[in-house]
Image (cartoon, rainbow over all chains, first blue to last red; front, top):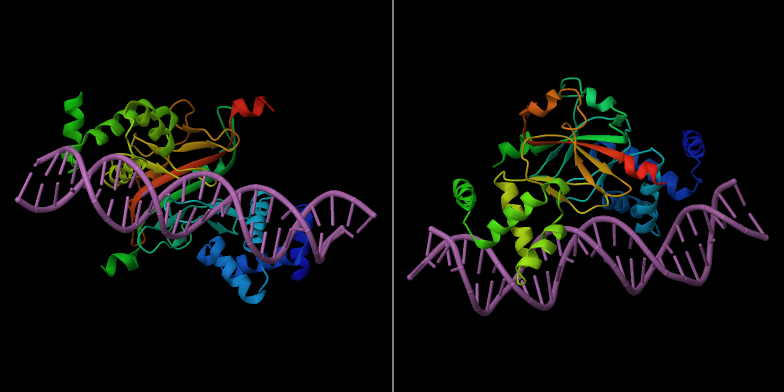
Amino acid sequence: MIQQKVQLLKEKGIVVTIQRMAVLDALEEMAELHPTVEDLYRSLKGRYPTFSLATVYNTLEIFHKMGLVQELSFPKRERCYDPNTEPHPHFFCRVCGRVWDVGKTCPIPECPVLKIKNLGGKKVEGIQIYFYGVCQECRNSK
Amino acid sequence: MIQQKVQLLKEKGIVVTIQRMAVLDALEEMAELHPTVEDLYRSLKGRYPTFSLATVYNTLEIFHKMGLVQELSFPKRERCYDPNTEPHPHFFCRVCGRVWDVGKTCPIPECPVLKIKNLGGKKVEGIQIYFYGVCQECRNSK
DNA sequence: GTGGCTGCAAATCATTTGCATATAC
DNA sequence: GTATATGCAAATGATTTGCAGCCAC
């Protein structure tokens, strides 16, 4: 499985380093959480005490550019990452700040827009669908 | 038309001040641009030299909470605002940073997801569909 | 060997906060 | 008159940058 990751990075033309492998691992472990840079840094710093925050930023930037992760952005919240690069909607709870994948547990109608590659001359490289609101848990506990 | 705006704020239960009227005006004028806080502040500061940046932030926050504007968020870019509160997709050019409304000039398939109010217990209060890519102008000029 | 990464610290940028004064109602 | 908004400046928080030393290829 380490070999798989080495392979993956090489395919994408990304120089293989220990740090980049470690970020891949951390992303995989925390995928459900949709980790922020800080989440990843905290975890990586625990295992590798000299791990640098700048390296986390650099690594995620190159992973994103090379299509290994999706980058999610919400108002009033740090951005976060999803190693599942298949386009799919996300839900953001404005109370607890958590982010969920939408579509698996709560099915939604087909989204033909997710297939769009071109908008009247504008080249589409990525698409995000965001739902904002309050999750069940936060609705109950108020 | 000033009366209309006074009316609008009162209906929403927002205290009417000169600054808030001015922000409404500026938003309307710059709607196409999808102005950032800085865009609005620059324009307002020109007309009212003591206008405060914090007031722009405060005003937009309350306008957003009361449903007078949509708030748009993109990675590596200041957030920006759209006074058109009808849910509709946006396109963001990663080269020039401009934001467009999608749907008018470049028609897209119906998006049934824009009608969703509930996702398995999660209350949906807002929805955004974002397209990321490169606009025609930026594709040509490289 | 060399170009590309990493770690560290400092710098930058957007956004928020605290508080005294001013304004809406 | 009182609650609420404003302006200013300082604080915060996230992200970026510069650069010397290190590592992958």
